[in-house]
Length: 248
Image 1 (tube, rainbow, N blue to C red):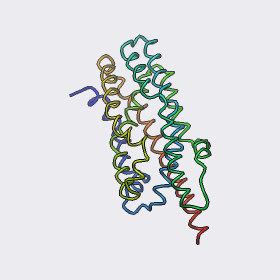
Image 2 (cartoon, rainbow, N blue to C red):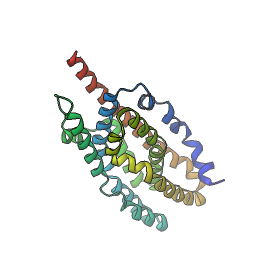
Image 3 (cartoon, rainbow, N blue to C red):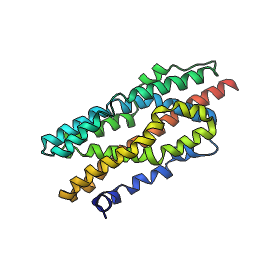
Image 4 (spheres, rainbow, N blue to C red):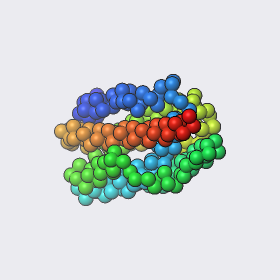
């Protein structure tokens, strides 16, 4: 049995269970979700996702540099190499938002502005998501960055495919095809998760007592991301509700 299984995973199960129980998850996976709400949610997720994604390569690189400064040369180099693969991914979310908004606007007289949606003020959860990364990188446990990516990667490989299946059922293959960022990360994060697991396992071999701290950082990141999804759903609901009231 690995040290990740004994020293880390027991401390993340409660937060991971929310991928089944949180209200936002239940709504997105519900067979009763309306096409309008699903579509409007995807627009918010993609547009706001740029704020969540743009700093990722810098976070990973910063964690790598911090690890090297603390004498953890091998893992630091692994992180710096990994950072190169994340550069520019926020541009995918912006492009997805523009495509989704274009489709939405062709069917509605009151239109949306994709660039304005991308530029809207971040929610508290979004700001905290950035904060937890920055605190990990500048602290004495920079591999906490890998723990955050590990937990959000778990969401990507466990929950996102289920959401994408609902998108296909509710909105069709055409809409699913536009979600380039989500589809790619549901696939490639399997490999990224494996890399983060190996790095944390290596740290736990020499410092098994750090498992609980790594888990605490990782679950803070996952908590922020789940609250971010709830923010996206709330904004989508509000807009769809306003439109329905205006049409009544």
